[in-house]
Amino acid sequence: MKWRLHGIVEPFTGLMLNMLYMSKLSKWRRKTKVTGYNDWYQGTWDYNRREKLYDELISREKVGSLPIDYFEFGVAGGYSFRWWLAHNNHPDSRFFGFDTFEGLPEDFGPFAIGTMAAALDSLNITDPRARFYKGLFQDTLNPFLDQYANGRRKLIHMDADIFICAQDWDKGWEKNFTVSTPQIKNGSATASVTLPSGEIDKITINLTLIKTAAGWRINKVACAN
Ligand SMILES: C[S@@+](CC[C@H](N)C(=O)[O-])C[C@H]1O[C@@H](n2cnc3c(N)ncnc32)[C@H](O)[C@@H]1O
Image 1: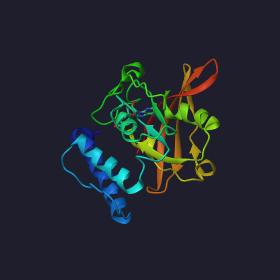
Image 2: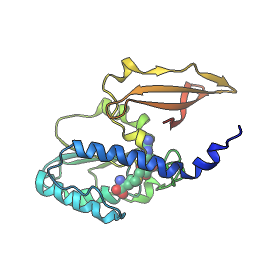
Image 3: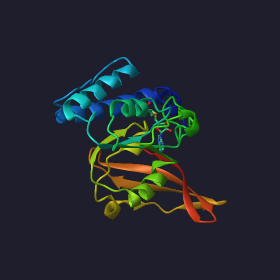
Image 4: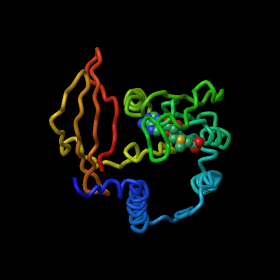
């Protein structure tokens, strides 16, 4: 190709994608009324600010003294998990933590696969109210839900970083999604799955499948747009 457009554009793709998703977030934020604590937008990264949000939930929703089911998707080293254990003292509360405990399952912007890895044993959380589920949410959540006794107040903390893991897909997605013809080569296969979505028109995800004794399994997931 005469024009090496990618040579000009590629150094800026991270910035451009960031602007794209920040503008979507900004639009969503404009449309979505927040009556309580709100720290959108902050130009600086201060992890300690999250405790202000947690404090606000305690004072507004009284979740510090009620029996709750606390779910955290993305536990990492357990900082927030420990915070909630320390700030909800009800003996009937239960705390469920989901993570690979091997870090991010794929590259995410400047963060390489495996970033934020914290071995489950290293958390050293001994509170008997806590339970951990190691693996991808995609693998651990459904078996968990099969035996979960629903009923009490829930506090759900989604902190997995990767957008596709947190995307609110259209509720009727299974009727509407399309799959491209899989390309199979040497025991692995690739296909694109396109899902409809609420906020954005559609999402296309590239799946790499791998053949195991138990059948085809998803090996890698990446957003195509
Ligand atoms: C930002 S860290 C969580 C920080 C933690 N919530 C805190 O407040 O200290 C993100 C975590 O999400 C986990 N994660 C991301 N995608 C995941 C997935 N699909 N399945 C399981 N864990 C995932 C990573 O392993 C990582 O530990």
